[in-house]
Length: 334
Figure 1 (tube, helix red, strand yellow):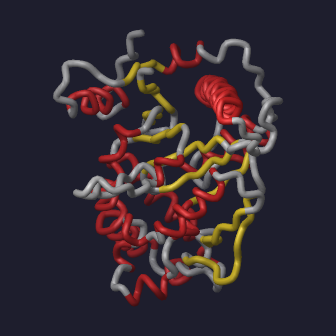
Figure 2 (spheres, one colour):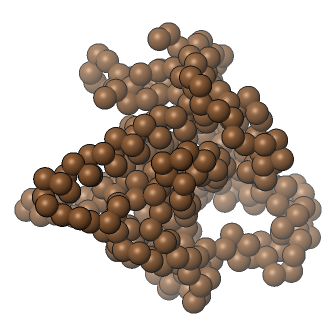
């Protein structure tokens, strides 16, 4: 299918840059324009009410009926087919091995930059997938809970690298995913608070053997260094059955980040208990300059060094334009 042409800096140029990264004369992805992707919805019903879209929207990302119908419903249909195939394969494997194991959750990973819309995407997918009859139990969690607490990051001198791969307790995350994939009934994960900008001590959330688990995070597609002796080192992505990367031009993401920060300054940051409360009383221009510094010195650096290089590992790439509208969809060839 031919991709729809877009203006400078849009999804078309992003996709061409993506293809140019490969030394091979072909792309590993099938590229769909928004219109072509929307046709793959087939007869998938719209199961979300307009009132639910408002609840699922992000701080600066307002979901529309068109976005759900044209982008998310085809995605929901595709993922439903993947889940059904995985369940069938697991059943066949268990029969071959003579085992009667419990079901294994299907794990969907949602990756991308800060402020690109990972959380909104994950929430919408959770709501849609839970309404398919074959997998009604869908859980959602973020990897933020596996960040080292601020006190530990400060001890290691890593507060300026919060969100970088080394700032996560990867061993704990891998143990969590291993338990989930092993069919453990109740698996606990730490809880992160964006309000407090820290892991909440002593608080956990329990994953209770879902049909599908959606995990969203900055570095879920990050590979580990391969051991020279050929030993086995698990990656987080080893536990992910289907991965989605949300993509946009870094300058556009910068605009989203600043817009979101300024909006939070006028809302959540006004609470004296908020970690960023000090910004609520500063002059807007000073806050904007400081937010821009946070973006460029931490989040943009992390995007360029660690997150963006993992984009080509995703099975599905959603390429967004300035309005948060998905303009193109790239699906890895089977």
